[in-house]
Length: 390
Image (cartoon, rainbow, N blue to C red):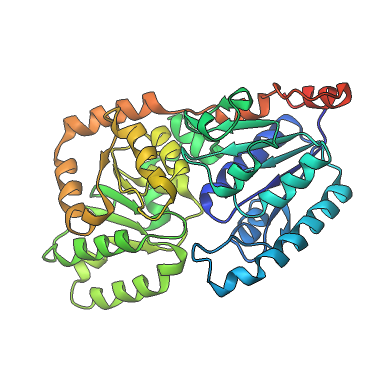
């Protein structure tokens, strides 16, 4: 029976949520297991992981800035050396049987040191285009559990298992009508009008400037009449300015403002999804996986500020199935309102999208990852350990 696991990574909800989903599944299988997380100091995992009930250690680590002359890069070598030393200390202290990385700065030093110690390692890669940390680790880890096909460009083909992206239990329940929250409970949680359709607009855990401007434009051009309610997840870093903007807007447009719930970060995504009749979202890997499972009509706005335009590639995995509509980021401010209203009027298209989304869902990713027992190391002793990871 497996008894000690370290899970590392973070930096955004797109890394943290799959890490927590994997941890939850391991605990479900092995109630006595000891799981600890390793994150980057100052990043959101240092708050979100303890809130989910797990302990976490922080590394003094950050990424390189794109501009090589950026002064922040001067400290990078010192942070990296410090983090490699601390990662080794943590591995000696906790003596894990398996180390799992989900991407993000902190997973690099820990998985590198774990691989040097010949501790079994696994990467869960959420995106169609891997982050730099996972690309660096590509030839060192024993197994890669992929959220999307086509990762053999980056990782050894014989180490890849396509599992889809792991989702937490609260989101997985949405696929089961018997266990999912009712719409009335969900709308009550957000204190929004239940007599109108609900549109959930989210720009990712960190927010998206263009999508926030699109929401503002949508509200300003509504002529004091809004035929639907809006849950507006504007991102933690944009919350203060958008909340103040909405307060000012409400002084002359109270009827519209009363239909809008402005939030920074949403912990109860299951309730946000359950409350929604239509969703407009960035196309991060985890969002794509959740939206397929939730199966609500979807508008995707890929971020242009990501490596190799991978959010567009993520989005096309649904758009090509007729499961979503794609709006370019450069068009979203002026066109989001029209797309929302057109889709709310088109019941046939919404129904087709729901069916196609359900067909694209991968609800068993966490189970497959914890089932994964195709690691192959030279040492028979390690093989025996890995056989328990099933």
